[in-house]
Length: 273
Image (tube, rainbow, N blue to C red):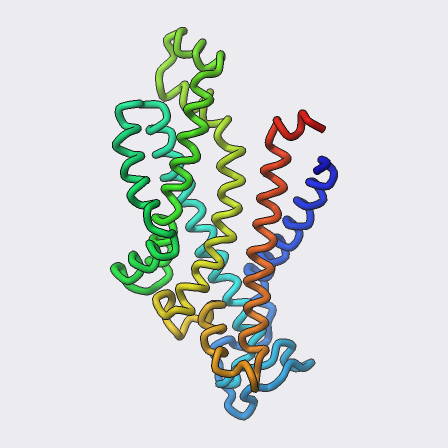
């Protein structure tokens, strides 16, 4: 794949991801309808000029609910990415640089990775309870092992580079070596992983909520909206289809952006052009 094609892929993914972020930030403020206000006289209205995405079973405007759901999804996704990055990178740096800690930390990470991430998140949410903070914590804990292992692998490679060995020979402190010489070389791989985590978090949050172990039913998240419309697929398919399309677009945008970033930041692929 040529570099120009990767750049176009990245721009396309970043454009759609940016649109979703802008809708999440400004959309609920610009919408004229209250996403929680019921209007039983306008139940299950098909998409129209007055209600571009139609209304749900209780007459609530679907556009307003989806825009608020986008904000909730982005809040959860960005929070999960931040927590996963901080703790995962920290664990990976310790494990990769200090061999005695490697065995202990990696066995803990391996035990967590033995469970599928969605199953681990379900168990944690069931134990912690529903709610946005608990969802964030559960999804972050399920993603930390992957970031930790990936960072450790990069650290083990970077430790063998000449400039790192030179810094060690010159008597530089461990903190200085890690922060100045090792951590900067970890960021490309970490950034690519974080875009994938953001996409997977949007899908995982909707899945958990749809299964009834995520957010409370009164919160208009995409998973709740789809769950409310699953019994209306024959009479009002837009209630579930439209938020499902938003989830698909979100996952696709961040995944394609991450794939393009991975190729652009990989010097081995760039050198082969």
